[in-house]
Length: 87
Image (cartoon, rainbow, N blue to C red; front, side, top):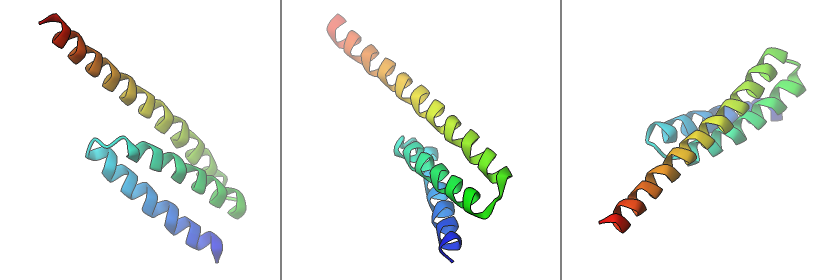
């Protein structure tokens, strides 16, 4: 019963995380990372190994995408500071 509830929580987190990313809110990546951990727990307890592989890959992709997003945001901010200092 707990696993069924956990799977619904993971699904809700994942959908809301995707919604946030679509609205250019980087918190969505963090929420999706938490969601992937929940899916890993569900997969391990239920023995669904395909889901485990998918959750691990999605976990890594979310971390990668968050870093790329953060790095681009930092470059944009540095560019703005440079332009202010320049003129």
